[in-house]
Image (cartoon, rainbow, N blue to C red; front, side):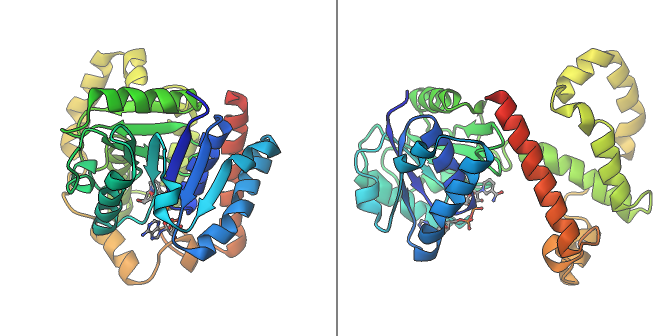
Length: 302
Ligand SMILES: NC(=O)c1ccc[n+]([C@@H]2O[C@H](COP(=O)([O-])OP(=O)(O)OC[C@H]3O[C@@H](n4cnc5c(N)ncnc54)[C@H](O)[C@@H]3O)[C@@H](O)[C@H]2O)c1
C-alpha cells in the first residue's frame, strides 16, 4: 500500500505526527494548514520526531506543507483531517473536500469526540467518510480507532484498516459511531471513579496515580482487562462485581470537584496546579519521562 499520495488537514500537534508516520510508511504527504505560523514550525517538529525515533532523514522530503487546500488535495487517495475540534469548521472542510477529491478518496476525521456522521452531514456521497481517532502523539502511540458510521462503506473500512496496519499502526474497528468511541469511554470511566474517590476523601490524587502506575497499570500494556478477567476467572470477576457494583460512582455529569478546580483556574501543569501541584521543572520531567518511554516502546516495535 506504500507510495500513495495522502492529504493531511492541519499541521498541529496531531497533524504533523500523522504526516510523519505516513511518510515513514513510504507515502507522499501533503499537509494543508491556513496558518503560516504552524506551517513554519512544522519542519522542526518533524525533525524532532525523526531524531527521537532515529528515522531516515530522507523521509522528511516526502512531506510538504500547503497554504491552499485545492492543490494540496489534488489526486490524493486518503485525507486525514486534524483541524480544530469545531463542528462547523470540519463540516465545511469535508464539503469542500468532496468537490476537490476523486469519488473513491477516503475522508477520515481525527476528531476526539464529534461523530463522523455529523462531520459528513453536508456530503452527497457519505460512504467514504470515516473516523480515524489517533492517540497523542500519533507517531508514538500505535492505536487508531477506525469508527464507521451508518453510511460508511465496508470498502472504506477495509482500505483504512489496511493502510494503517501497513503503516505500523494498531487499527481497531469500532462498529458504532458513539461519543468517545472505545478508548475515551474506558479512560473516562476510570477518571469518574478516581475523581469521586478523591472528592469523598478516600485518598489523594498522588495515591490514585500510584495505585494505577504501580498496580494494574504496570501490566496493562501486555494484559488487557478482558484477558485479565479470563486469566483470573470470569467467576471471580462476577463475585467481585456482586460486592462492588452498587458502590461505584454512577454520576451522569462531571463531578463537582473538577468543576470547582476549573472555576478556580487550577487547570493542571500549565497553571502550576490541578489535581496535583506542579513546578515548570516537575511538569517538564513528566513530559520527558513520557516521551522517552513511548519512544523506546515505538523503537522496540520497529
Ligand atoms: N491533542 C490530542 O491529544 C488529540 C488526540 C486525538 C484527537 N485529537 C483531535 O485532533 C484534531 C486536531 O487537534 P490538535 O491537538 O492537533 O490541534 P492543534 O491546535 O495542535 O492543531 C490544529 C491545526 O489546525 C489548523 N487549522 C486551523 N484552522 C484550520 C482550517 N480552517 N483548516 C485546516 N486547518 C486549520 C491550525 O492552524 C493548527 O495547525 C482535533 O479534532 C482534536 O480533537 C486531538
